[in-house]
Length: 98
Image (cartoon, rainbow, N blue to C red; front, top):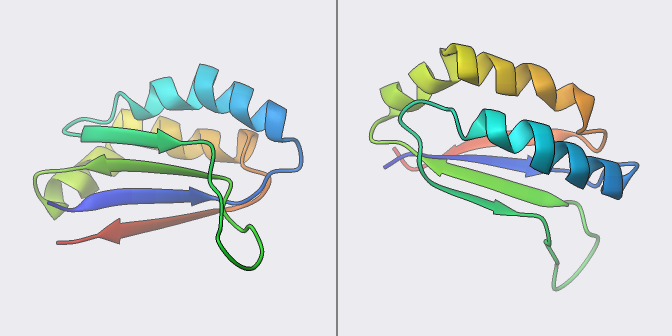
């Protein structure tokens, strides 16, 4: 099962990030068609080195085509369009698995 993983860099205003993420962005992400096993981590730590990741989002999909369709859907487009509103620390989006 392919997993969509979104890594958020440390934002300029962590409290504003959390507020927007929980109140606006996460409800959008929960509407992704075909997504299952959604998980969010807002307390990320590192064992060594700098702390480049502030938050992590993961969602599983039955197939890669289902993941691609979810991102292309109106819900996926809305979630992607919202990212600049709160992710001042940057974002990395990866797909784990096939």
